[in-house]
Image 1 (tube, rainbow, N blue to C red):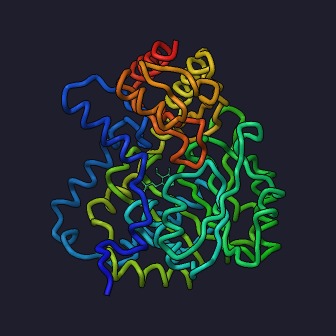
Image 2 (image 1 turned 180 degrees about the vertical axis):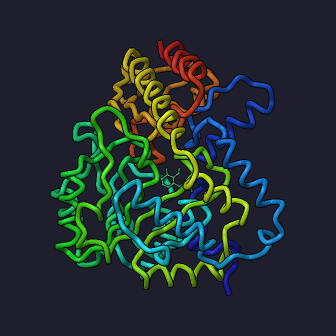
Length: 398
Ligand code: PLP
């Protein structure tokens, strides 16, 4: 008998700090405050009209009112296979695809399917908040590899090799990265893939920001560059970031058939299929016109440059230029120790609090990503808000 109400497994996980910041900012905004939210990892654009129309048609179709196969609508799984070869050059079969409730759920499925207690997964910090929590929930051990702005927040083979043990089962690879916006050049992607193959490791490659790369940076899919790795690679992707569809909750895994079948069994007992209407919307997004993807990328690129330029002007702030995704990840280390708005700010957690209270600016402290001293600002918000928000930060710190 135990008196504990919440299981030890779940008691050990914290709330997603990014969702918490967003919720706090939205609550203040709902109360009539003028809050600038840099917290959310979601594009400010609406979902494209043709996608919404396809969803509306699906709503009206009684066939779509029923369960679909747990792994997803066959047409959508095929469209995902087609999209994968179109966008990243990786040839896969529809049977390797499992459609889940967003990339987040896809990751949870795969960690649960892949990991036994004590299995280690290498992840580079700064990391996306849900990776370590999900790995732990699945019984695995996240092994964190520190990276710094000096190396562009990219892990090297030496870093990976130093962290590898006989218990290492997988390496989690994400490029472009959330929260840093780091993009690995193709030769580094290939090196890491060869290293993983040489040591018989699994690779989980999160390609959710594949279309959001800027300047000279280039997206590269690891199993395309290292085909030998294909039968130990799980690709994660989704429609959320590319098509402004965060709320629709459609993501997927692409895995070797044995793993896909296992993920499907798992999902069949947990959530069954993703809502049909959302699947129909995702199908329209993947198979419809793609011009919007590039148009929106250009908008993000403009905002990225504005954000870096304005942040760099603030005394004590160093803002490396991110090459992908829609986040900047500046260091505020030289600001710490100062009194700001009547409070001694000793950490970026304090800083995020003061900025929300005194300047009504919401951003996510680096602590959430295993990187104290930094903050993450999403620039997926309107141009005017972007400028206004950074100006408020500059004024408060000035
Ligand atoms: N992977 C990364 C790196 C992300 O930043 C996110 C969302 O923030 C996801 C996966 C999951 O996205 P979704 O669950 O909305 O598809």
